Image (tube, rainbow, N blue to C red):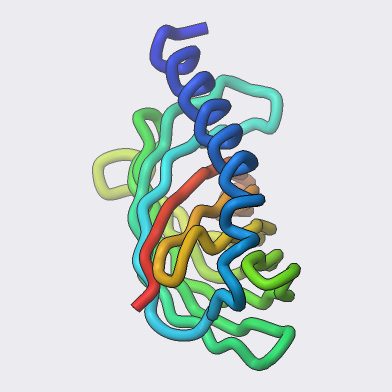
Length: 167
C-alpha cells in the first residue's frame, strides 16, 4: 500500500464522517432547493479493477438541475484526473428523488472520454449512483459511486466525495 493511498483513505473516511455528522444540522434547514446551476469539486479513488490498486483522483464539475417536486432532473459536465489513469471528461445527466427536506438520492449516466497515455483516448459510458446533502441554502456535499465501461474492454471504478455551491 502506498503512502498516498493510505493518506487519501483516511481523508475520505474523515470527510464521510463529517458528511454524516452534518446531516442532522442540515436537516434543520427547511426546504433545500435543488434547482439551478451548481459547481463543485471532488476527491476520491479511481481503480481499473474493482479489487485492484486504487489511485487518487480529483476533479471539478458544473451542472444545472430542475426540481420538479419530488423528482430532480439535471445535467453535468466534469473534468476528472488521476495520478494513475489520466484525465477524464464526462458529460451526462442525472435523475434523482428528494429525501426529506435536504437530501437527494440520484442516478447518473453519460459519455466519458479517458486520455490514457500521450493522446491515446478511450470513449466509454459511465453510470453511477450518489447522494447529495444540502448543508445550507447554497452549499452541498455529495458522495458518488461510479462505473465506466470504456472501449477495448477497459473498465473504471470511482468513489468520490465532493462539495459544491448552488446559485
